[in-house]
Image (cartoon, rainbow, N blue to C red; front, side, top):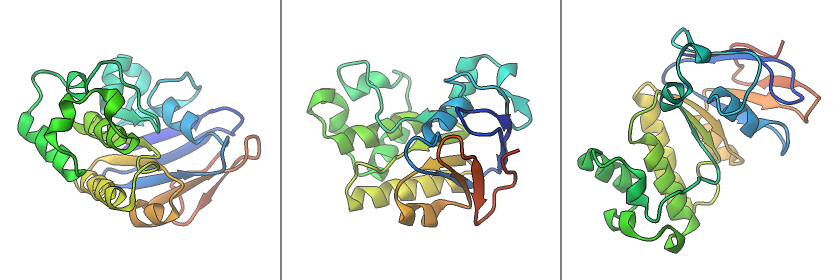
Amino acid sequence: MLRVEKLKVGGLPPLSFEVAKGECMSIEGPSGSGKTRLLRAIADLDDAPGYVFLEGVERREMPAPQWRRQVRYLAAEPGWWAATPREHFPASVDRGKLGRLLDSVGLEDSLLDQPIGQLSTGERLRLALVRGLIDEPRVLLLDEPTGALDQQSRALVDELIRFQLLADRVVLLVSHDSVEIERLADQRLQLGDTGRGVSSAQPAVNGSAK
């Protein structure tokens, strides 16, 4: 279980909620309301007062790299630091697992050796998702995972997210696609305009802003 207690992000009031294994919570709200900042704070990428627990262990009780291996933030615009996608995977990666993940999002293995600059936005987005899932983090913080994808690719990614839920992972999802939210979300957390606070929507979150 992921539990957030009195987490203070930007101009929002302190947030408290919990998401069980195998559940997806959507984080919704207008631009500038703090959705991305909330995901980054949970991943311990940005400093934020308050507490975040994974199976009872608070984020500050373990080294930050160890926390981020378990609580994985996947950005809407993923970063790349090497020439080809393959260089972003460890040499020891299970090639069978990698191949299955690529196939699940409609990608060929040959794309791993293409220069990053020659890949489409959609290909880079799906490759970043594969990169984020390959070591099986326990929590997925997904920031617009299908925003730049066509309908077919979006359906494949949604199915992969659903598979992660069946594998008892926790998913927090930021998406502008209301249909995607309806398909995947068990809970919905609605953020208001910055400074206006937070309200819960149906299905209700287990905790609300305090």
